[in-house]
Image 1 (cartoon, protein in one colour):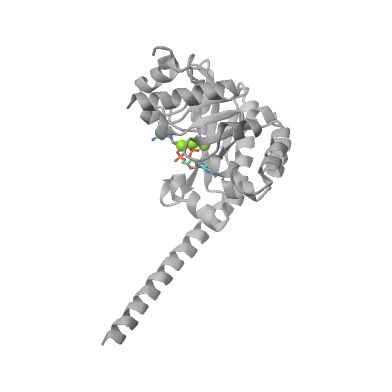
Image 2 (image 1 turned 135 degrees about the vertical axis):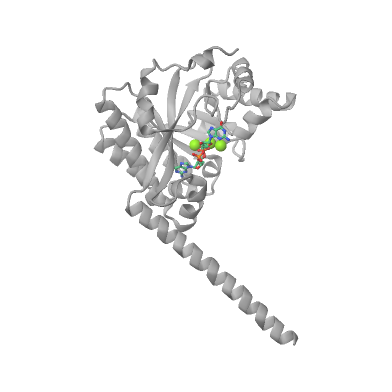
Length: 287
Ligand code: C2E
Ligand code: MG
Ligand code: MG
Ligand code: MG
């Protein structure tokens, strides 16, 4: 009967739902354990001066080294971490590890290179980022000028009225403020100037369009010239080809990051990079 069929369907949905909940709970539990067991490591992706190939900074990117599954990329656990609020703890570990790594390289006598860390909107809105940064910079005696935080535009335009206040307090520590994935959100350049942003990281979708159409090129050019007028540096994300780099050089884009320059590297591969006189010779050859 129709009634029986309806009932069957209800059971079907119910079992799917509990399966979903079980999976969610177990993923949350797995992530919680991984944080406790300290299974996360940072990789570092260089950002270089587009004109000279000089290493300017590196971005810390988190990876989960799972005891059985091996290296797991952030796309597989950051969303769960955000859904469950665990991003706050994970984000604190990322800041702690970033400061600790700077102290290790300093102890090895390597020249200081600024690092930036990604901060998710939820972590930012929780309001502890300033405190956490201050705590670990003090613990490891890190010059705040060596630390930057990467926030997406969604953070900037959140209704949370305290965003400018909180950002100001963070800027007062002396750390740099970077806007990540710029162009995918809705912030205006004037907002960015009011918030005293140091660096715009233009989303890799726009780097891709750069070499595909005149319009793509014009769009990028507009961002670079407006940012210049506001004294904000521009980094192109996701640079994968010599052609993209050449075009960015003609636009006088300040810095580039992407596989064409270097993939994110494990910490133990960074010192060699620092010692090679800070230069990426293959970049200078272009243009
Ligand atoms: P993002 O901050 O925009 O980082 C750039 C991502 O693009 C990185 O992916 C990087 O490996 C990748 N990438 C770099 N160059 C190229 C390129 O030339 N081509 C392509 N196709 N991709 C490139 P990853 O490491 O998988 O990180 C993905 C995202 O996860 C990051 O995007 C960031 O939003 C988030 N994430 C990473 N680490 C953290 C963290 O510690 N905390 C938080 N909250 N989020 C993080
Ligand atoms: Mg980033
Ligand atoms: Mg980005
Ligand atoms: Mg991006």
